[in-house]
Length: 435
View 1: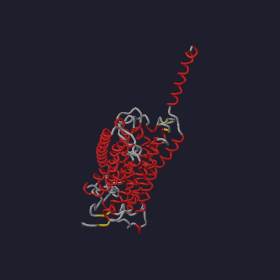
View 2: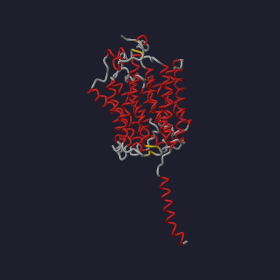
View 3: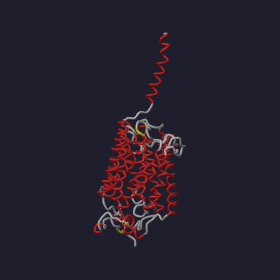
View 4: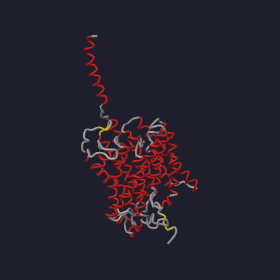
């Protein structure tokens, strides 16, 4: 007993040290490799979006439309490095705003976020910020000045996206503390971008001839290519948000396959029922809607629940597209219907179906939390976008001249065109009524 009394403190000390060492985060090369790949997959989504949007516009504006997505990569990557990341995830912030401790990504060297380098986490999150801005461009294509879009985009990324990401995903953020469930960006990316796009469509105004002119997609194969790239990249978007190669990532991966598949079938069924024929654009749109809707829920619901989410989101977004004329806004590429509406449906269904995996609070409490998060996001992003666009409008015109809009924006904005002179008639406006 005497000997045991002598050595027991030493054993306890060694045991405590071992426990402390086990609790200290350690770099995991498997997790790191997966997050590097997932980050690259998410980056690919923005060029994929460029093809998706580009195919939906007129031939005379295809380059400008695609450039609005591509330029988001350059603009947001720089701003995210300088200030966006620290606004979103800087330690020691308040409930609404991160600190400036990581301005210019300072202080991240040799740091870990879980089991991955914080530099990798910062890059992964930066890809989300990039595509969030690119999504908004679909509402104002063919008429917004490129310079005005850049200025607005920079302000939106820093003053709307980054604070919202902090509130939802940072351990200091009030929505995070309140228990709002948004695994991979249904609220932060899709509701925010969808609502902002609708407001932008109101402020910038409709395209010339809106309501009298049918703007027919000029390149449906581009649309399908873009949708395929988005689906491929979205696997990193959702499964990568587990921040590890683990069971959570596996669940997110399989639900990201199932929900868009169900949504695509649902959209095609609605088309066939109403118009007699399913369309390629409808298939592409349906799968994107399913991807949007499953994003907040992908690691919180079972595979069968993903089918429910996909079908309900497709139904809601399909009818939002049919009824969009009642909004009196020319959301050119249906960003609000496909991202805003599907994002809201997905966020609410996350609360309704999280019980299938035991995630979150009890059903009623979680639903209230989700509703609060959705309502706050709609108001915050809507009002913020309106103010920013009005501010940009005081500095420079938001719209190109009417003559440039009619002939197409590519030449006037970039001194380039996507097709030869003989091909630019593809996708030209088709007047269906009026003067």
